[in-house]
Image (cartoon, rainbow, N blue to C red; front, side, top):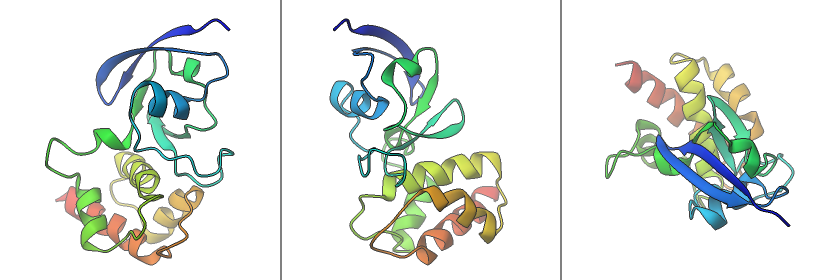
Length: 157
C-alpha cells in the first residue's frame, strides 16, 4: 500500500511523517512520532483517552486518520508543559489528587485545556458537560472537576 506524506504542526513545531491511508492519527502519533501520551482506550471514540486538539477542537485521535493531519495544527499532552514547568492544569490535577492510575489523565487534561482556551471562566456544569466525552474508572469525577475549576481561577489571575 502506498504511504502518504503528511506535513503538519504538532505542539507548535513543524512535523512530517509517512502513513498508510487507513492509519489512525493515534497510531501515527504513537508509532511514527513516538508521542505516546495519548492512549488507546476504546478505539471507538467513547472514552476520550486519545484526545488531542486539532485546529482548536478536541478530537478523538482514534477516529481521525493520519492523512487528515495535513496542514493542520495538532496539540497533544506532550505540548502542555513548558520544559520542567507544568501547565496549571497538570499541577492542579496532582495537587487535587485528580488521578489514580493515570491512563485517562492525558485525555482529560487536553480536553480541559481546550475548554479553558475557549472559556476561561466556566461554570461547574460547563466543565462537567465539556468533559463528558472522557471516562475515568478510578477517581470519580469530582476531583477532576475541582482541579479544572481551580486551574481556571488561577489562570484568570
